[in-house]
Image 1 (spheres, rainbow, N blue to C red):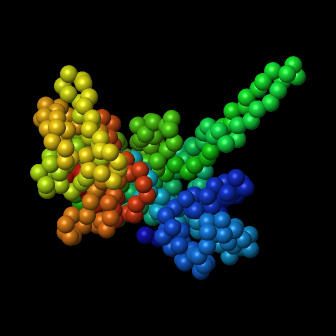
Image 2 (image 1 turned 135 degrees about the vertical axis):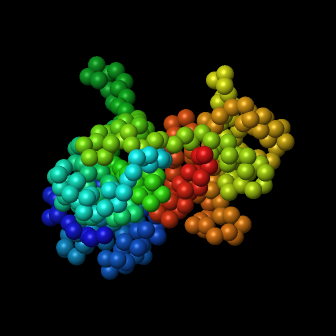
Length: 348
């Protein structure tokens, strides 16, 4: 994959500050990796790191484009929501043909995006920022600016009107984030997934998915792909854990009965297992056999020394009633791919 880039965009001061903030919000190891790549010392507090980065941006030894490219590399594997799909039933051999795909993109004026990383930072409308393709994989990444007002009582104030009446001022802070969306189609296994970087409360992930597929519908039809039902994995993961052969540790499981009632079990804390108390275990087993998985709050665990991509527990929420997977904490690419493959294996 090449690293062709466009000329740097003109960033406002607020956008520059946001980019640096996004970098410093990553895991410490990820920040350190970025600084090492750019020959900058990686020791110090976050305030010292920010000062060092801003100074390097000021003297030109570091570019904003370099930060954006690194963020685009790691953020898709951080906090996110994911939809899983089956691939088309129709033949897909043409999609493995690099010349055919290149010509298709040229027809839709997207040829310049093929295998190119473009630093489109904060467009007001969602835009495709890069398209990677080879005979094994198609990956489409889009970006959009999203902003909102967030309640923050730290900035509240009180005062008086001219008539002496009490006034209470409630503060809302203007937040801005880069929303990344990526659709990846495995052209060998013929399955796909859609990743949406975690958004603040009030945003609907289904609407973001609609927005993305509307953007690419002229050359890749959403109807070719079938959304996987993520309710079965909740029940299967629970049953495996109950049998002692599980790959997860349940923190909470919610089932919906055929009559529409809900039954939820939840452990005392995220560090404690849900299973292990006879009465609760029996109730969960009974409702599992007569209901469907509504939501599963799991910690994926390294499996008894077996070869997995995990070296520590991974927090995963399977939102069965929305058919999406939530990774509420940052991870790396290998971890996300591994967990998604395991969830997919429990869908049939």
